[in-house]
Amino acid sequence: MKVHPFSDLDLDIARTRIVLSLLAMLSLYIDPTTAGGLFHLTFYVLATLLCHLTYSVGTYFLLESQIGKRWLPTATTLLDLFFAMAIAYLTEGQTGPSYVFFVFAIIAVGVRATLRAIVHITLLGVALYLVVISAHNRMSGAYVMRAVYLAIAGYLVGFFAQQRANYEARVRELEAQAERQSIARLLHDSYVQSLAGVNLRLESCRQLLRRGRPDDASQELKELQLGVKRQFDEVREYVRSLAGVDSNSTHEIADISADPEIRINGVFDGSSRLGERILQIMLEGLRNARKHARATLVRIDACEIAGRVLITIADDGVGFPPAADPPWTIASHVAETGGRLSFSESGPACLQIEIPKV
Image (cartoon, rainbow, N blue to C red; front, side, top):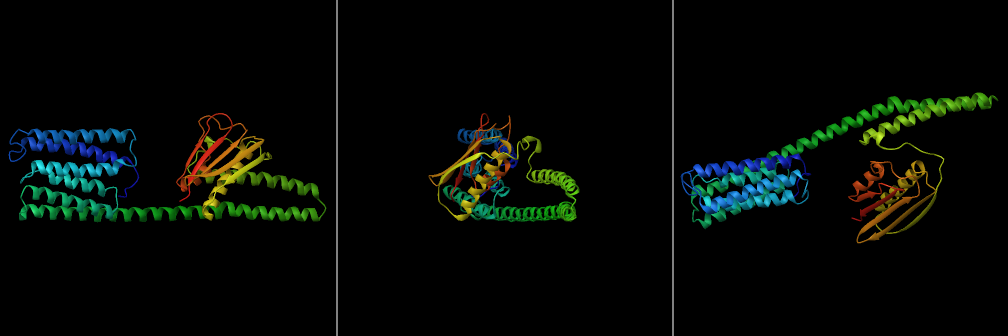
């Protein structure tokens, strides 16, 4: 089952599950037609409802603690169906609440999964409900129609969930298009014009040199260098803002003239795209060491272990400042490949990267 990324939505579902458990317990307690009669619950019904309440509260605290991000959504879906079936078996009657538990399981999937997953859960819920009423020998029209209505409810939830997903995708597409247009306008109105100005001033310098005025040409080049540096700083700041990186969280260039030695040891194979991505990471690591680390030696090692490429980039420089984030360009490359990145927080810089080959 494919679900959307773990988010606060799962906490909302967990809170709703707790409320459902409490309301079901109260409704069964005052329902005179099932689960033991008026103001009474049989032992097995009470035990099942308490187990459901414990499961609901436990799930909420697991989500609060950020535990089980990968497996918990799927596990809760299966447990919701299990408890719906158990409650249906113990309380099945004209006013039994099991139908609500089945609908809740479908809706909980519907707000965070694809239409295909919702259809699968709906069909599974219908099958489980039919098993329960068959075990109670109640395969009459009224009870079978409940299964039909459950299937209709699942389809409607899936339909609206798919429409919502399509709408969100369209909104993201429009937002991305608007952002691209904004970037294009900024580049055209600011940086492209600046480059045109640089070209004109370089032509002026060439004319000054041709006329035998090297001092004037040198002054013009000096002013041009300062202007280019300002534009470089602006472009760099703008690019970092697009990447969502705090410009104050990283240290500035220490020495652009540094030229440390480099030792590279790498043996791995894979696709050309994988090789290009790995070389980009190595190149960016070398650039960072040269610009920021004041290092004299940079060592890059790459090897292949168990279907993963392990990359180590280390230098003998000043290391990362306290509470620093990993280099965002390298981190973005690693994230796009589904890999992992760790780095030393004290002493000389050492990046350790794992990239899957698939």
